Image (cartoon, rainbow, N blue to C red):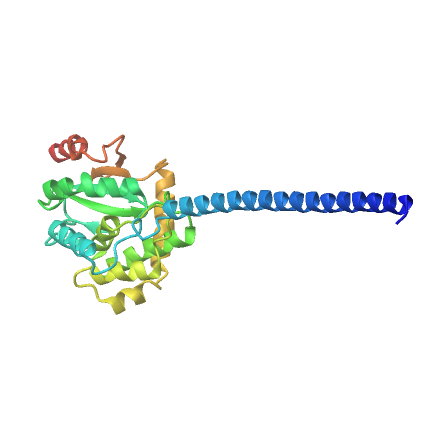
Length: 273
């Protein structure tokens, strides 16, 4: 081997070494980039998992925010409370109480309204026991859309209650709805839910109730109630009118949703008058 051949060989070896180092560096760079992408993807996946978890909590996964199922322990307890409160009190379509009672109270509500539920479960039972059961006052239930997001759902649920009124059992349906009200905006008001409430109403003929839901009189009643609420300047639920039966009713201003005593001065004044 000549010196030239030896030099050439050394140059070729150096070139080969440089080529190998370059290939190795490129391979390491590619591996590093891949690891970086995987870490980034892992971070995104972690964020997605967290978001999904938040959504599941917010929408009430596991059913904790849904209304109780018919015949469940919670539903049976609600039915017992409602029967105890209303049994023996006269009912006629939308009215609870003696039709000749000297005082009339109009209660405007949305069945999905949580404030209506608060009033119905807190202050209303005392009013019913003290004034309605004793024949001193009667209460009319009227519809007013506030909490229910979809107009079609609002009409469907209010008509379901009004249809029970054809058998003079509407107040059982209304009370059961509020007692078993689900989380607002959770979509709990389904046909199954409405049917389940109907099955809990004591003495309700389900076939006649289903048929009555198709009668145009009830959507017309919902429209008439909305017009009355607008005329009276109501902006939220629950809202109330009160007055002597057969006379002009007046708006009841700022009643407490939890304390029945806030209704008593107006009722007592009418009874004495």
